[in-house]
Image: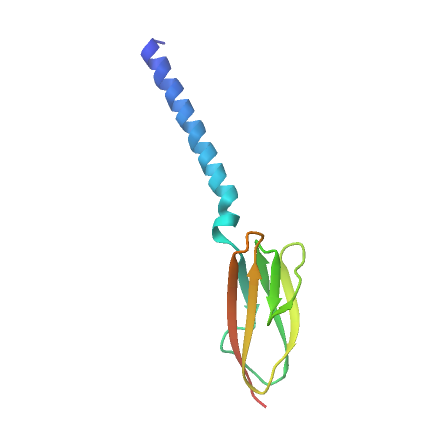
Length: 116
């Protein structure tokens, strides 16, 4: 190889190494970038129920704290949660909020109706 080809190869390999490091850093930092993530499986927003006891289930990721109507709830190892809740007659607002270890706050609101 000539001296010019060797220097091009070194620059190319160094550039690839830098790109791999930057990509890996961004992949690892996505928890910090996106903050807490709350997915609610049940109930669906706007649902109507005939019984007052319902189950609230879903998954929360990248969290340190999770609250259901300002009451702490807990997740399993994979971030899934299941909680029972009594509805009041008529219109109900259910609030789930989470914080991560960097104090980033995320909130989800569900509106359901209990018909008697």
